[in-house]
Image (cartoon, rainbow, N blue to C red; front, side, top):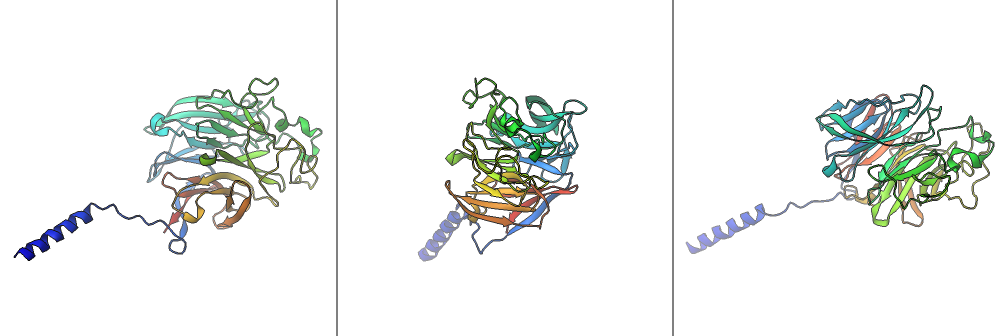
Length: 384
C-alpha cells in the first residue's frame, strides 16, 4: 500500500511541475522553416507608408490621400481635412508612430501639401486617433520654398534613440533635365537656405535641436542635418551603434545607400554615378573633395523606396541585416554590412510581388511589405 501511495505522490508532483513549466520556444532555423509571402490586406490605392500601433493594428497611407486603419480584421478609412496634392508623386507619404506611442498616442505623417493652385511642398504633422477619428492635429514642419512640381517630395520618417525626428526631402526635380543645370553648385540641394535635397532633424514637438550642425550659421536653415541629396525615400536607424543609413533614387543609374553623418554633403547634383535620362553627363564626375561617397550604388537603377534594419528573431539568418525595398526591380534587397564594408547583397522575391514601396518591421519581429499599385497589398513574410 505504501508503494502505491508513493507512486501516486510522485505522479501528482510531476503533473504539477509540468503545468508550471514555461513553454519552450523554438526559433526558426535554416532548413526547418520556410518564409512565405502572405497577403494580409489588398485593395489599397498606391500605398506609401505603414506603421504599427499594436501587433495586429496598423495604419497605411495612400497616394490618393487616403489614410487606412487595419484593425486586425478589416480596413477602416480615417477621415482628415488635409489639403493633399494628389497628383504625380504627391499624396499622403510616410507615417510613423512615436517611439513613446503607448504613452502619448502621437503619430507622425508627411504629405504633399498644396500651397497654391500651382505649387506644393512636403509637410510634417503629428496627430492622435481615437474611435477611428483623427484629432489634435499639429503641423510641425513645412518645407520651403513651395515649388511648381509634382515630383521628388522625399519623404521618409525615422526616430533615433533620443526620439529626434529625421525627415528625408527630395530636390523637387527643379530642372528640365539634370544635365542642363547651368551651375550645379547653385542647385537646391547644394544651398543651405532651402529644404530641398536635405535630411532635417527635429525634436518631437517640431522644435529644433540645438546640436544640429548648422544652428546659428548665417544663410543656413537650422533644421538641416545633411544636404546634397536627390530623392531619398528610405531611412533606418541602428540604435546599438548609433548608425543611420538612407537610400535615395539616382537618375539613370546612381541609386545610393549612404551613411548619414551630421553636416555632410552627399554631392547631388555635383557628383553622381548616374546619367541623365537623355544619356548626358550630370555634374562634374563621381567624386569631389568635401563630398561623401556612397556605401553602395546601383547601376542600373533598382529605384530604392524604403529601408529597414532588422534585429528580431523571427528570421535568424537575417538578424542585424538591412533591407531595401525597390520599385523598378520589384525586389527586396538584403544587405549585410559589418560597419566597415559591405559583406553581402541579396535580391529577394524579384519580379514576384510587384513594385515594393515599403518594408516595415512589426512589433513581433515580422517583415511586412507594401506593393505599389492601384490594387496595392500588405504582404507579410510569414514564417512556417
